[in-house]
Amino acid sequence: MSAKRVDTAIVVVAVAAAVIGAAGLIGVLGQAWMGYTPSHLLTYLPMILLPIAFALLAAVVIRSALRRRQPGVNES
Image (cartoon, rainbow, N blue to C red; front, side, top):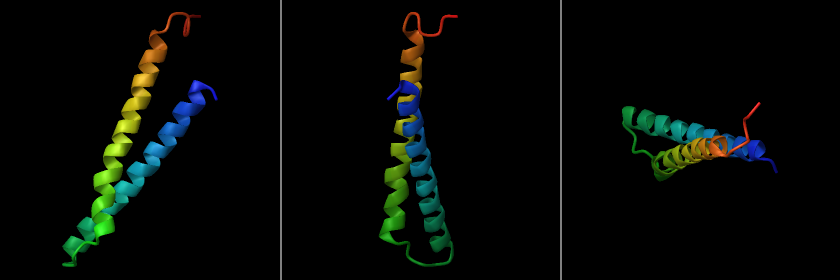
């Protein structure tokens, strides 16, 4: 697998985790606004998935920076 395909896969997983985490957070806020007790699943989803998504995106940025610093990679 090429580095570009690996980075694309990491970004897709990170965006999916961020979207699911954000939806869980909106669900928790919506349930709290309606006066219900938020479910445990919706409470834990944002706490777990949003930091994972952030870490994955940071890993992609670091991989890109390291790849650009390699000699002869982006010379034209």
